[in-house]
Length: 563
Image 1: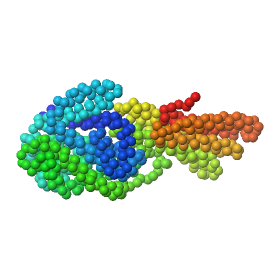
Image 2: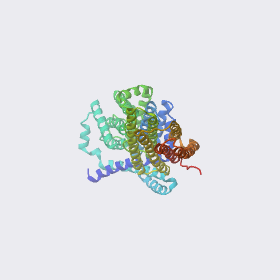
Image 3: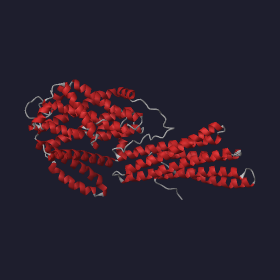
Image 4: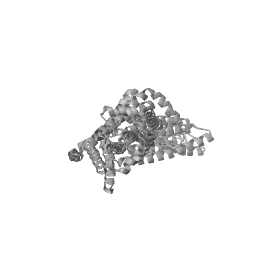
């Protein structure tokens, strides 16, 4: 076998993976937020969950993309574990379409038809309105072109007359279960390494259609691919929360159980699938490439449909098994810095990465609200030991706030390097502004705590009237924070910013009123100039905090305060 043919084979596989990636990403961009809404809405029961997972996988042509998306939704709290299991089952069925597409690529001479697709695709790519459709056509053209090249390369390699390869595969007894298990493990390991079940399916078809690999070993490789492809979701879930790790583990458990029962009835099951497409697995003649490739696709489809039909009734039991396997971690998220929703790496879908970041921003807001609550408690704390402890906790939260801003910003910068839609780019710009303003709210909280701490070191205290005024101002600021948090969790089109603007106006008026009153009270010696300064510093910091809150609201809805 010449170096040229080997390089041609490797290049064709790389082109296949790239083509499927481009096609999948283009479809996801065309679907946009609708894909996420469909996944969230159509999982009311196990059957609609399976249907949803199947349709989305058929649409995006990547079970890994669907599974990673599902795991991320569980991580973000948008799907329950039970709902995610049904969606993952559906994704296993949806991915079988890939095998049928490959069968067509190996059975028909389709390379002549890809050139018009390339031409139309490049024209659409330079059209701003239809560029995603152009990307999709490019991906399809690359995929079919690579399949054509693989088929042609398989013929050039003439594997059917390669005696060394024939002897190697002949050394395995096709009727032995040990052989099946060996090839199953090989399929699993290769898929884990290549990170593409489609590429290994293509290799399997090349080997089988060349006549060197018997159908039963080919089927064992396909089963191994089913297990190996679960690695992607499990890697994505490593830095996720407990439920996300359980959802990824459910994918592995589901596929392993399917392989276990199919091994018990492997030979009759394979024979039935082969007979359906008109292929005789027991024939000693050189296999018909067309029927053999269809036999592999038929097995892949029948296996996943049957596995889902059996296990769909046992979703609660699968849920209990994965909960037993994946134990919950120590819940110290409130006191330690750790991003909960953002994964260690960028998600396969940039649109989904934005959703993860949005959820993290919502968590950021919750932390800031807790920090503000601590500051309000600090104001009335009289015990020195508890005061020192509460102040130290606020300092810790200020550090968490700084770290969260930096990490979310880094993540968004990485996401922005991807090929994004204009809508997603605008979202990222708005989110970068949101986290900057939320961090400023944290700074204001810490500044108020520092002012209170400085006041405590002195001998003077606020008057009862001053305490009442500070509490009232803090109540208004807290209301503004609550309104902001509600907006960050809701959908943009359902948000009414009027209340936020009204609160901010009320805070400004109250601040101006207290400023005038403070000058009068100091002049009338109702309290000292020093305590009056501390008083107004807190009031001004609360007003600044409210300004930052309004900036977050404006960034979220894309509007400005009316004049």
